[in-house]
Figure (cartoon, helix red, strand yellow):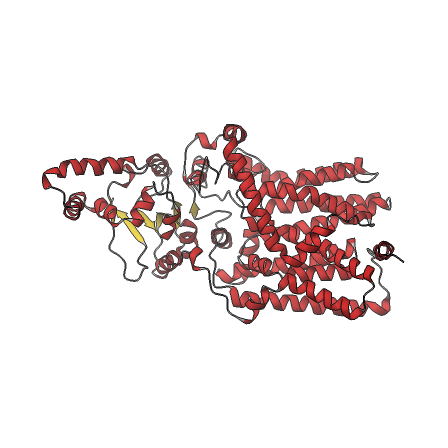
Length: 593
């Protein structure tokens, strides 16, 4: 018997869902033992790597969840000038617009069981990681067999990049769970369609639609996954004329309330404020400039439609650069073991029609996901949602290959162990040794300062370059430092007090032509803001300029100050003496009313 025949026989036996009673207990025991080990690995990894929440997204979700848990509704203490301008006519000027509701509400439920804390946010993410591993097992079992599902779940559960993403406290593990569950429903639908079971197919179709809605409620942009899924139901099975309407009906009915809410608050249904992520972090709107502006033209729906045309170069660069980052992140998340066998498995046509059907849908979903992540400014590690299905097909191909080669059972187990080692070897150091925090990206001084503010019981409304930190650590209503005087005026009109500005090392990431960068880095500018005459005298002494030239120097400095987009808005602000209990690189400016 040749290798091809052996693989064919192996595939013919895959996908069976019946168990013989005498081996049922053994399978259950093995599955239970493996998942116990995976849960233990996750717990140990978390213990050795988690210090506190550092990521902007994590901190933002945490403070939103606390607002929910404290009965304030789906609101935020992190005020983006862009969002504030959108909600200018709203009765709730701090209504949350940037996040889907499911993950913040899940964290809020955990907060009600335990007091709001950093580790609770990470626990919720880890719970959804474990749920994803269970979904991976069932996806592999439905498409292939229980061994494939268990091997795939083990590979995902041992992957250090995936465990790290899970400990960040973000919504990507929840999205991975819903995405994997979506593929399970698609696989079950395909099997039902092949067996001409119309009712079962309709039920699985409705389940897939529910998963698409749950993805949408996790992150607005994931609603775009519904498009390839709808195309699949339009072409798959003899009952497609029934199943497609079922899919669309369930999708529209369940998604309509939240889409209508987005329409009322932003004027853009479905994607809501996330639609403007298309513009953000491009050459036209570098960094976070878009969300620190209240410019009315930027909020126009026509801007969203015309941006790819009028700024095609920025649009194309964002897509190409983002796609490159995502490809790198995908390989990192998959690991050597999964990525190696996955690449080969994409070129192999499985004899199981369901396996090929699900993989065909994934071929359509993956480019859609890359475009979403690249163009809409999502974090590259959002691509982790594709790791579970990738692990299933990689594990399936490995087991088929081992079966075809007719190796001794001992060597099969050794090679499977090598596969798992390649998937999880970077997890080993974290299990046995404490992993240091990446200080470069944590902005620890801001965390320390705002924690001190909270410990003193101060509840302020302030402008800062790190509002997500202030909102969570100090429970302050924190507005992002705007980019122009007009933005300050717009926020004044909304009733946000212009009394306190706190600058942290986050200002070092802002453009160097912004006043915030200069005020944080250059002591002389802070002195000039406090007392122009004294600062001018100091400049003349240091530069050894003739006192007779002082008026010309003063006019020059005044002209430099006016060239900053934020200039008049800072009139009356004075830098405060350094707080001895605060980090040295925290700058505080206040203005007396």
